[in-house]
Image 1 (tube, one colour):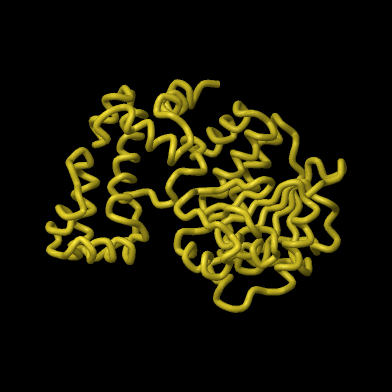
Image 2 (image 1 turned 45 degrees about the vertical axis):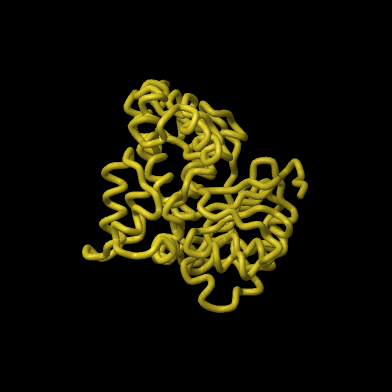
Length: 325
């Protein structure tokens, strides 16, 4: 994928009827704000056939036909909730392929990853998509190494993400790569985004897990873990708490939550540790208070999941550093 000099600052957002509005507006707003100091991006809204398209919220967007779009540096392909309800539009796949092959960088948001896979751009690459569709993604495209539960995954010139609000995280990542961390941080502050979440961050914020009925025993167990993350939780103990076998508990978690019991506990503890670090706790205190026990255990999980150390997170997430001008 090699772009011409003329495309050095051009970003094409491939819009189409029903595409998720924030997948378009979020990145577009972030990149436009970067132009105040970086002056790097020229946005173009394109579609397979051109004309006015209507997003998921009814917002109309005027587009140019993909075939008439000059070469671009970055292609952004949004997702759509209904994209997989019928065979994917061949013209949309063709536009993704034609624009993507000529771009230096390609970004897919949410189910936009399916478009890139259909276009052949994800073959033998690592990729992700919205957590609801990762299993389907794996089945449909066995040649793609699916990374579930990551906000976004970068493999060479291609970035795939969970979509929805993650489009803003990806845009900030692009701005940081193109313009530097100071400008990315400034754009984040303008957009009232607390901080740019790393790509390895879990898609599922623990308190925002799928709603379960109030009487569901799994919900009560989850709430207990969230309220008391520093307690010890083994799978047999958790299974006994809801009067099922360990195997049945594991099936329940995978069916309702999309992850294992142990993974859920780790995510709860990770989020609690992040909150403690943001409030000024030391790494050792955050490790003890979140249930990781010691700083080394906390560091291992941070590096594996977020690709940064607790100390680096604490420094970047502190109010003094986040809002420094």
